[in-house]
Length: 94
Image 1: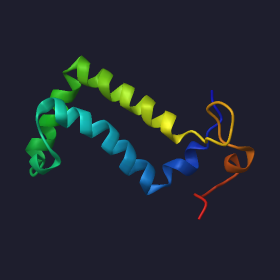
Image 2: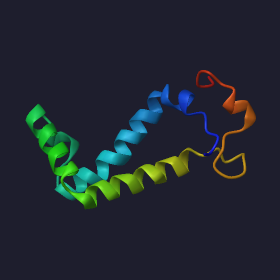
Image 3: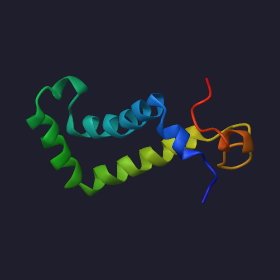
Image 4: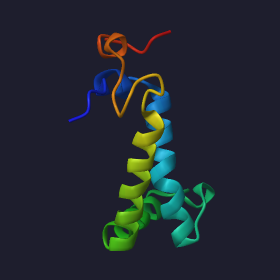
């Protein structure tokens, strides 16, 4: 398993905003919807139902998440790892 400090990344709001956007954007595009169409809980539930019953959308979301992880990698280190310094963080560096 790669050495990425997931605990610190999970504490970052930017991480979650990016992850949600990466997953929702292709799903909504496939369904012909935009974020403005998610104005009721019924519409949100409908998107979830359509997502989980469509293998293509699930595969697309998995590929999007893998791409997102690729973007998260530390470009100053070799491979898909964080630097030793970054692995020691307990909070995102300010």
